[in-house]
Structures are given as structure tokens and as C-alpha cells.
Amino acid sequence: MRFLLLIGLTILASCGSGDKKQDTATPSLTNQVETPQAAPALPISSPASQTPPPADFKMPDFAPLYPGAKIQSLNSASDDSNHEVRLLTTDDAAKVVAFYRDRFAAAGMKKTSEFLSGGTAMMSAIGKDRQASIAITKETGHNAVIVTYSGE
Image (cartoon, rainbow, N blue to C red; front, side, top):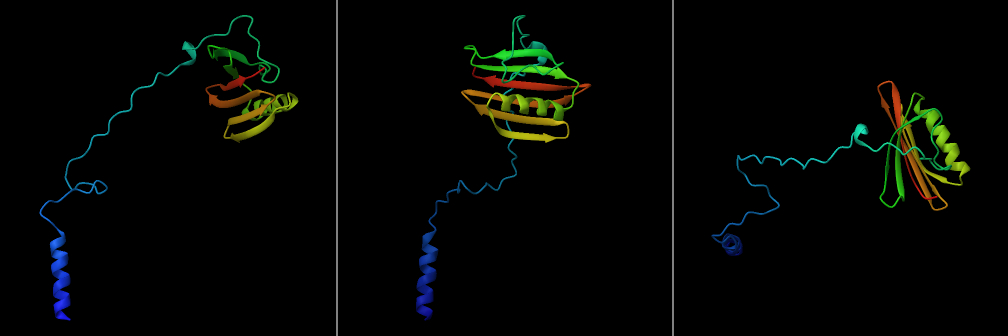
């Protein structure tokens, strides 16, 4: 029995050769601290730098201009397939969501998501080769409503 134990220990001792390799999954045991690299800065488009809508701009019936809201900016894809309109209103988020929920349904669109909490909201709908969504955020003295849509 002692002989078998001695053979087993000899085999285990011979497994470790002189070259030691660092396991890449195991962190190195040094006192060096890696400095995180900063992410590259992304351009931030401020409302003042966005394009104001042309005088003849009209939002579609399935995603209309919210009553009493002021259009702050308009961003459209180069092929006019997607649009993003930023609106300002003093109405609360629940009232704005109810308005767009009714308009999306009247246009035959099915609501795909809805979220309302703490004065902010999001909602989206799809149907008849159309897509639309709204996002509402509180700002000082008003709510910003971002309406995105595509289709006819």
C-alpha cells in the first residue's frame, strides 16, 4: 500500500515541469492597477442644433402634432423614410399618452408597448406598413415629447 502511495506522489510531482504559464482566465497577482480607457466621445445633438421644420411641414394623421404643442425640431432620414419630431407641451405625460394611444388605434395600429411612470412615458405602435412611437420627458416648466414615425 505504501508503495502505491509513493508511486502516486511521484507521478503528481512529475506533472509540474519547470515552465509555468499564466492562466489567462486567472488574474495576475500584481499590485499594478489597470487604468480604464475612456470611451470615445459621441456627438450630442442639442435641441438648438437640430433642424427646425420647413414652413409646409405636416405630421401624418397616424402620428399627428399634439394639440397646443410647439415643434422644437425635426430630424428626418435622407430618404424621408423615418422622422423624429421634438415637441414641447405643458400637458402632463398621461394626457399626451392618451391622445397618441387614441390616434394610433384610430389609424389601425396595434400598440406594442406602453410605459408611464413619474411623469415620463414611452409608447409604440405598428400596423399597415407604419410604425410610430413617443417618448416623454420632464423638463423645466414643460414636457418634451419625441414622436418618431415611418410609413405613410
